Length: 375
Image: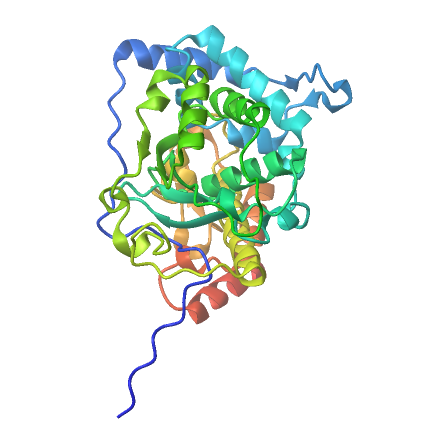
């Protein structure tokens, strides 16, 4: 009998954390903190315009995409980052909305970013023990010269990480491997670039870092981290872990075997990985957009509901998974979703065949989608 051939390396992102992974617990809000959240929510519901001081032509009315970004958890993240200052949180939320427009974040395409990604210098693969998506940074695989697109690449990938967050998860795990390159002599990050990245992360992605796991740290990089420490807030510094056994943070089966000591045999193939990541994230975004529209397009909607962790929205609307959102119920006092919104849900979810959101086989899912469209 011939020996069994080894399994081929994985080339696509994992879709879910291990069954025993659990999101980190969140403390209950006190009555005082609840009142501050409600005050901020009232302010945010009054947002109607986004003013872009740097690029005035991009100023204009708040869009549905921006309204859907203003979730309950988003508002709470900004409140925590500002030590529960309602005024400062409202100011920073408007600042981030303006930055997202001016930076062009929602306009970055997979095609535009693709040249930066060809060597797999950033990879989203696996989830840690708290269900956080793992984003690997591999500076040694640097394949381009310093440019704005390098930073665009980083934040494009951070956005894709948020697409992949399972219900109850708001943060990511960043895994950085400073193993030197065999092809390029200088792959170090310029201090100016590092400062820009830290500024964006702290101002426009507050409370998003769960852990930063860092290995193969040479003395030059160690000196670099000491140099930028003054720009990193104390809470973030506590999340940095250097040259530890990373299996204590990420299950072995979801931890990359290359350099990290995990059991996940992963090989980067750009043509396979890039399209798979794009399709997976687009599917997630469309599912969330459909759920948001079905529940009435509320500012302050729950990310737990949008991610499919609960069928009930903050308004009390109940999302019907079995019919792909074509039917739902909402308490009479809050009103029902409009016919247009229901159509949006049917079209989006049927078109993308949300197999994972529906119990049953792929065939059943396709038949349900066809029935919804026919109705």
